[in-house]
Amino acid sequence: MLFEFSMVFMFLALGAAFVLIALGLGALIRPRRMGGVRNETYECGEEPIGQGWYNFNPRFYMLALVFLIFDVELVVTFPVITVMRQWVEQGRGWMALIEVVLFLAILVAGFAFLWNRGDLEWIKKLEGPEEGGSRT
Image (cartoon, rainbow, N blue to C red):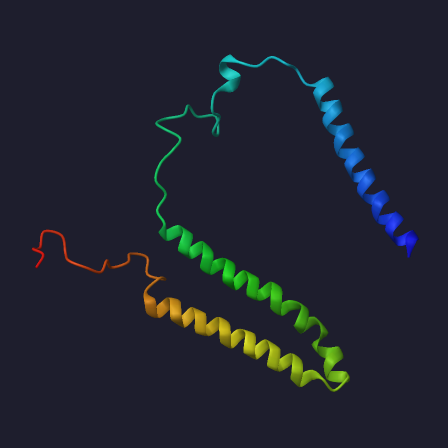
């Protein structure tokens, strides 16, 4: 038991030593000439035009979140699928099947909820009074 912990400690110590040695050698070898052209923004060899800060459309965030949901689904489902053959041989295959089907049902329900709410629409309709209309 103690041997396993010492191996983990040695692995972490060697990893930290490697990083510190690489950073130290880099600090000794690299040139220290900063300023001028070197501090300018570099983007594919082109001169920067305009500001670096701009408003990002939030529609991209929603699509990224939906992608992450389905990506996590794959990560969570994969281990169950890999052991399913063993579970079938042991007579517990129905349990793995129920787990996967239940998980996918919850995911499909969430997807249907997002679709019904209109969160998957690229251009979302705003609710409320239209522009130029009168309020009562």
